[in-house]
Image 1 (cartoon, helix red, strand yellow):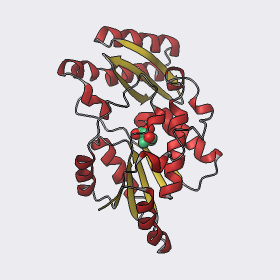
Image 2: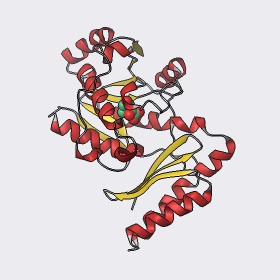
Image 3: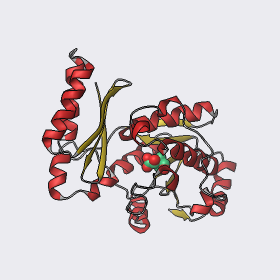
Image 4: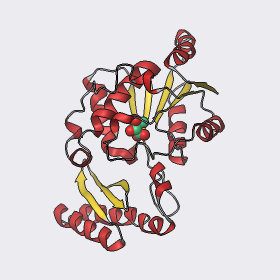
Length: 265
Ligand code: PAF
């Protein structure tokens, strides 16, 4: 496995692959890798000859009060996991490789960014589509894989790729969960043992809500009941529980940790 630490190093690695006609599968990440990321790597491998994983904690998708500084960073540990997973290239760019002219937002998210996360993190998706667009132009993937845990993000990126007429296929990977159903997330590392117990109830409450909606219960009633159940379970604050695009999606806080999850209804 090769690690490219700059845009130039990446270009030198990619050029011969492109000349040989190899297809590139890409998994963009912010590091702090867990089994969920590795399942996306496995999925990418089924679609392409060579696999590139980027590790970049993107400053423009964090609001000033969010956890950019605290976000876990462990390039050495991540690289070891990716090596074992058979990844070909890790791209760990410097901030100036992605933002040579300052942290400008150059791509705006479309209609899919409205509501849900967009209500509570109004600048988030513009930062996501800006970094993803720049990573795509550097990595030149044929296929890019994103996890369904960030379900709205996946729709926002598909919309951006279509609007910009990018020649990359966007593929969604299933949510990886622990044995209690908790969606794997780098932010789970922030949780105390007590918070972890509560966090594990999130997926069960959403599943119940999704089942109720599938049975014909009014969406408003089912989602309001799910919000109440989350508060009763010990969540401190609920940003939303909503039915959107055939799924129940939620964002809720345990202390300062914000968890998201979604389940098909
Ligand atoms: O989902 C993530 O980890 C990030 O939002 C992404 C897509 C890598 C962009 O920074």
